[in-house]
Length: 333
Image (cartoon, rainbow, N blue to C red):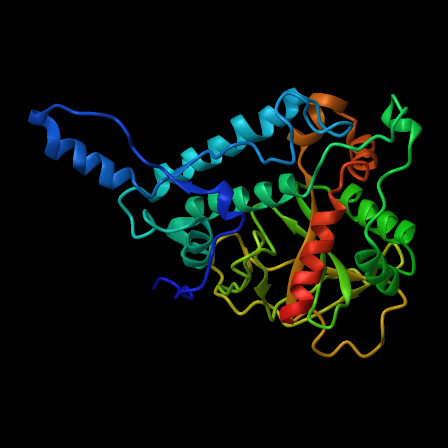
């Protein structure tokens, strides 16, 4: 049964996911056929413009060249939407948003491909919209000659409360990403108590929609979701961080993408986290993510370029956006 979507819901990065509008003309003899085609395609997904924070032709220096940005957007993202259109055409999800498709197909094994394409499109969009080319001070010619951008005070203080310092957070975050043996994303998240953690997701997993529920501000392009699941891990610690174990996902063994396609696999907290973790992580609000896929670093860094890719990631984090998300979540928590 399809999940119920709140009337106030908006899809993640709504400005980046538009319905496909057919503008082709037709002769009078083919009016009815053309109308049918237009109606059948009206709500299918088409590739939006490149995110405004990634300048056309300039790439996202020093993280991505312009060729890689085009690869990730014009090829990969467009391909995901095209594949999704093929999967949902003629189904109940044909006129659904990306978010609605993720929620509605998450527990339907027959719709695993639709779920995968929709979820991967959400993740890729959130990742790329969290980046910007490094802003060089006047007189600076090379990105390596100036330090990475600093977060605004609000998000910086929040990170320091949870991880002791910004460098400690970056180390924990990068270590989690570097240590991933498969493909996925690593996320900085916060809960309603403003505790922060690091969550890796694998394959088509996402923290943007969890347990078939999503809530987000109409004025905010990013969505946040409620979850009562952080799947347990057999590891007791990772890079000095506590691994918080929560209830197992209660889906059946045939659910899409394993035990829980829409819930994080682990929540890593700093070793200084409070010992009382009851209710911790029940609601996860995504702030930042990095893509851990070979397609991201192979073009610019080569087969063994993962470490360099992760180092340069910090040069291009859009901290203003992270801060806006943090403040937005706090205002409604």
